[in-house]
Length: 119
Image 1: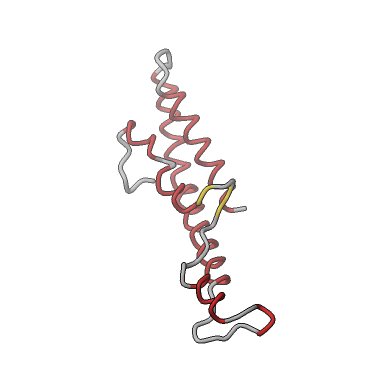
Image 2: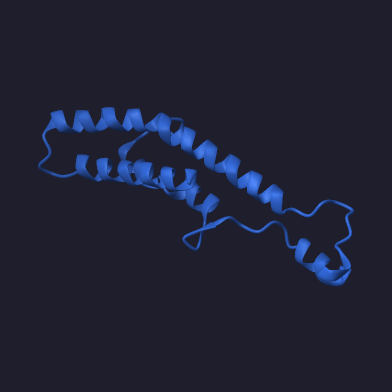
Protein backbone atom coordinates (compact mmCIF):
# COMPACT_ATOMS: atom_id res chain seq x y z
CA UNK A 1 0.00 0.00 0.00
CA UNK A 2 2.79 2.48 0.80
CA UNK A 3 4.35 1.72 -2.58
CA UNK A 4 1.10 2.53 -4.33
CA UNK A 5 0.87 5.81 -2.39
CA UNK A 6 4.41 6.65 -3.49
CA UNK A 7 3.48 5.80 -7.09
CA UNK A 8 0.56 8.24 -6.89
CA UNK A 9 2.90 10.95 -5.58
CA UNK A 10 5.37 10.25 -8.40
CA UNK A 11 2.52 10.42 -10.93
CA UNK A 12 1.35 13.76 -9.51
CA UNK A 13 4.92 15.06 -9.61
CA UNK A 14 5.18 14.04 -13.26
CA UNK A 15 1.86 15.78 -14.05
CA UNK A 16 3.08 19.00 -12.46
CA UNK A 17 6.40 18.75 -14.23
CA UNK A 18 4.79 18.20 -17.63
CA UNK A 19 2.27 21.00 -17.06
CA UNK A 20 4.96 23.49 -16.04
CA UNK A 21 6.99 22.72 -19.17
CA UNK A 22 4.23 23.49 -21.66
CA UNK A 23 4.96 26.40 -23.96
CA UNK A 24 1.84 28.44 -23.19
CA UNK A 25 1.87 28.27 -19.37
CA UNK A 26 1.77 31.62 -17.58
CA UNK A 27 4.60 32.29 -15.12
CA UNK A 28 2.22 32.50 -12.15
CA UNK A 29 1.08 28.93 -12.87
CA UNK A 30 4.68 27.75 -13.10
CA UNK A 31 5.35 29.37 -9.73
CA UNK A 32 2.35 27.52 -8.30
CA UNK A 33 3.62 24.27 -9.78
CA UNK A 34 7.01 24.80 -8.16
CA UNK A 35 5.32 25.45 -4.80
CA UNK A 36 3.30 22.24 -5.14
CA UNK A 37 6.47 20.31 -6.01
CA UNK A 38 8.09 21.67 -2.88
CA UNK A 39 5.10 20.45 -0.85
CA UNK A 40 5.20 17.02 -2.52
CA UNK A 41 8.90 16.65 -1.80
CA UNK A 42 8.44 15.80 1.89
CA UNK A 43 5.59 13.39 1.17
CA UNK A 44 7.66 11.65 -1.53
CA UNK A 45 10.62 11.29 0.78
CA UNK A 46 8.51 9.88 3.62
CA UNK A 47 6.66 7.49 1.30
CA UNK A 48 9.99 6.29 -0.11
CA UNK A 49 11.36 5.57 3.35
CA UNK A 50 8.17 3.72 4.31
CA UNK A 51 8.40 1.63 1.11
CA UNK A 52 12.00 0.67 1.71
CA UNK A 53 11.23 -0.23 5.34
CA UNK A 54 8.30 -2.41 4.30
CA UNK A 55 10.29 -4.11 1.53
CA UNK A 56 13.20 -4.81 3.87
CA UNK A 57 10.82 -6.22 6.48
CA UNK A 58 9.19 -8.38 3.82
CA UNK A 59 12.59 -9.58 2.58
CA UNK A 60 13.80 -10.40 6.10
CA UNK A 61 10.58 -12.31 6.72
CA UNK A 62 11.35 -14.49 3.70
CA UNK A 63 15.04 -14.97 4.48
CA UNK A 64 16.01 -18.40 5.76
CA UNK A 65 17.21 -18.60 9.34
CA UNK A 66 20.98 -19.21 9.40
CA UNK A 67 22.07 -22.74 10.35
CA UNK A 68 18.52 -24.03 10.32
CA UNK A 69 17.45 -27.31 8.76
CA UNK A 70 14.24 -27.43 6.75
CA UNK A 71 11.59 -29.93 7.87
CA UNK A 72 11.84 -33.30 6.14
CA UNK A 73 8.53 -32.65 4.38
CA UNK A 74 10.02 -29.71 2.46
CA UNK A 75 12.56 -31.79 0.58
CA UNK A 76 16.24 -32.48 0.77
CA UNK A 77 18.87 -30.08 2.07
CA UNK A 78 20.46 -29.82 -1.37
CA UNK A 79 17.29 -28.51 -3.00
CA UNK A 80 16.71 -25.91 -0.27
CA UNK A 81 20.34 -24.78 -0.25
CA UNK A 82 20.28 -24.05 -3.96
CA UNK A 83 17.23 -21.80 -3.57
CA UNK A 84 18.60 -19.98 -0.52
CA UNK A 85 22.02 -19.38 -2.10
CA UNK A 86 20.51 -17.29 -4.87
CA UNK A 87 19.66 -14.49 -2.42
CA UNK A 88 16.36 -12.98 -1.36
CA UNK A 89 13.47 -12.70 -3.75
CA UNK A 90 13.02 -9.23 -5.26
CA UNK A 91 9.88 -7.31 -4.32
CA UNK A 92 7.81 -7.13 -7.50
CA UNK A 93 4.97 -4.69 -8.00
CA UNK A 94 3.15 -4.86 -11.32
CA UNK A 95 5.88 -7.23 -12.54
CA UNK A 96 8.68 -4.74 -11.86
CA UNK A 97 11.34 -4.87 -9.14
CA UNK A 98 10.21 -1.94 -7.03
CA UNK A 99 13.52 -0.91 -5.46
CA UNK A 100 15.05 -0.57 -8.94
CA UNK A 101 12.00 1.39 -10.08
CA UNK A 102 12.40 3.76 -7.13
CA UNK A 103 15.98 4.39 -8.18
CA UNK A 104 14.97 5.83 -11.57
CA UNK A 105 11.33 6.91 -11.50
CA UNK A 106 12.13 10.53 -10.65
CA UNK A 107 14.85 10.95 -13.27
CA UNK A 108 12.59 13.24 -15.29
CA UNK A 109 13.23 15.93 -12.65
CA UNK A 110 16.82 16.26 -13.86
CA UNK A 111 15.52 18.41 -16.71
CA UNK A 112 14.09 20.79 -14.14
CA UNK A 113 17.43 21.29 -12.39
CA UNK A 114 16.00 20.08 -9.08
CA UNK A 115 18.66 19.65 -6.44
CA UNK A 116 19.38 15.94 -5.86
CA UNK A 117 18.89 16.26 -2.10
CA UNK A 118 15.36 17.62 -2.54
CA UNK A 119 13.88 14.41 -3.88
